[in-house]
Image (tube, rainbow over all chains, first blue to last red; front, side, top):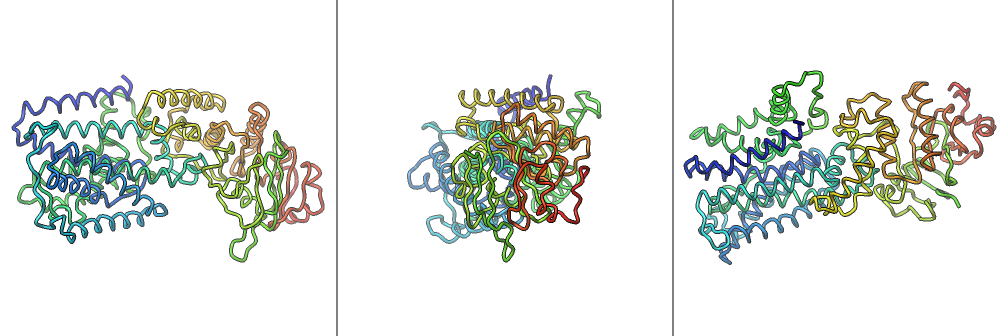
Length: 329
Length: 257
């Protein structure tokens, strides 16, 4: 089987396993996994912008918050639940993302990282100070339902799985298209990309918008999962840092990597329990270790292992990713 | 009518007049040389044409269309393609992907492409077929799936040419195509450029230092010095032109240079 064949087979197997899993585990774990899915969705969005397009963002927690608060306010004032929140949250975040993309057009590298960090801080400040968002008091969401049917832990697990599948499929479709090639072209060389007829302004802002919308979908689900939003979670920049960590540790420009990385940043603090604050140290160590020893992240390491297991000789195996082009995380 | 014409183009960098009223006219079907000593303004004019450099006065027309208000990404859509002085490939991508990115102007509806709609997939299939043909034409079939950063220099040069021609341009702009090439590679490149001009019916504008290449392939040349035109004509006449010899004084104009 070709490498691509293996990728597709393993993807189907993984989703098949995830479909069957709730039957085999307590509903508490289904709920934990659904929580993880919201991070995976956010990380896939960040990956599209940072991994593929090369625009480093430390501000996507802001879009996550836009998704979460959109659906929370709708739930409070209109009595809606998951699906209307998903539609409104992604559209609104997409529009804000487009605007932020325009503002950040001329920025790259560390300057862009700082500017996006500023965006996350600004969103946090608005949430803290504008009374409709209820600050640290927070907003309660009612019971979750889809199409009028109430859902509990396992039901919500499947909603999360479905949204994650859709976001990943959309991301995959974009990446393998000419538009995805244009994103990567801008990352590798802006000048050459322009010479090939790629409109940098348009494609960068579109990448920002799509990435923001995807991340916001994660935020919408996050709000419904916790049935509560407050600036305790959304008032600072830790979410943004978590998402970027997930993308870099998992493997830039890899969808599977985003899933692995998101699992890492969710599960490490969970298993640390009382020592959860120690997770920030572990995340930092993981970031440095990946950037130094495996710039293509956990997904890259696994891909190399897989190739070895498949019995190819070392000579045939070309390096998966060129360290120079990805070391910019 | 000329395919490309520049009239009185001015570019100033602070107090420095990089281009001081330069004219250029490239007839269709030709291989046209733009030469001059270091700092003459060749590359600046080249960048004005490919829209990477704005100019303060004058006009550049391509197929009768004024380029003044256009950006670098518009050039490809009009039928102009360029290469870079030092190879500028999408290094993390394969040969095939590089050529496919070169076809960006023919992507069609981006939404159909992104969503893998039937029309987008059909277009993608057609582009891939065409990209493979381009690769074959440039002897790149063996390295189609290899990351370009790992390819030898000569291959990278050919990938860049294939990428530029993938959009089927009418005018190909080459910025010092043999910079860094040895004699063998230079000869090979001359052959390729001639073939592009003859077989694909592409007009070529080449900025070059290397006189052997200019002599070998150019139908006509324009010589710049200090941002002004100093001569124009067939390569043989030009290389003996008193103003040109003076401009190059101190540099060798001998055949092997």
